[in-house]
Image 1 (cartoon, rainbow, N blue to C red):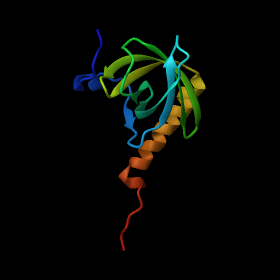
Image 2 (image 1 turned 180 degrees about the vertical axis):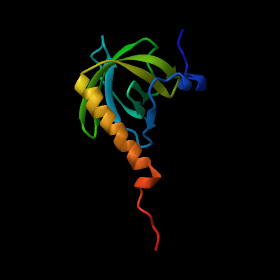
Image 3 (image 1 turned 90 degrees about the horizontal axis):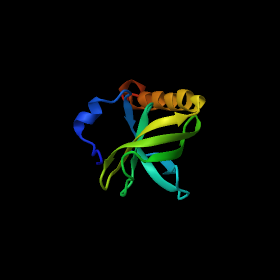
Image 4 (image 1 turned 45 degrees about the vertical axis):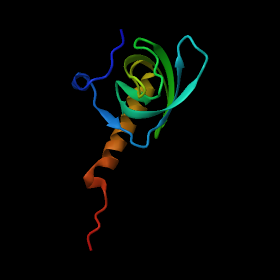
Length: 126
């Protein structure tokens, strides 16, 4: 049985996620498959991300991911935790070099939060 994302699942997250309206590219493939796919990331967090794709793999599928954040390249292994049919898949990071996750992803999330903060925008007063 596949778990389809619903609103209550968002309340169970251990880490907040940052929405990426313009997306971020991610390459991914199943751990047992050589076919590599490229998609856009909609949200990014310390615990995982949401990948936009019209045909998501089933819940429980193990994936290998590679993506770029402002502070460098990240390679990770992940597990599909939920799907939105025709919309994408939510994955949880299961393995990653400690330096990748702790430094690169955290710095990128902090930078994105700062850029979205109303305090970081220049005022247009005359």
